[in-house]
Image 1 (cartoon, rainbow, N blue to C red):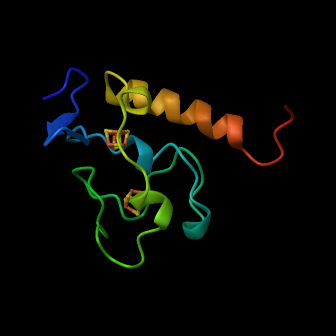
Image 2: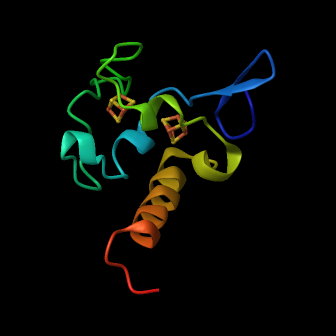
Image 3: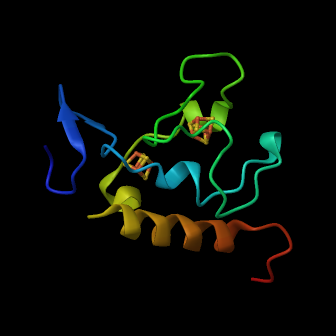
Length: 94
Ligand code: SF4
Ligand code: SF4
């Protein structure tokens, strides 16, 4: 286990079990998912219910855990991802 609760497997970071922060905080336009709402495919144990299936958006498949994004805790990840969502929201005045 890496210090952040992320799982280090073959030198690659894997998700913190029971997190799901990146399936909640960001908006996902292809699902009409607003920010801060759990994805319709997020399971009760915070896993992706359509992992490996073609309807899983490319943005999900391309997202890799990182110490910066995932933080020390699930709560820290939710804060970081929410700030990113706000900073990149359409219509934001720089
Ligand atoms: S925030 Fe990080 S640890 Fe949490 S579900 Fe997303 S990638 Fe995994
Ligand atoms: S499709 Fe899966 S990985 Fe993507 S946000 Fe939904 S639950 Fe998360």
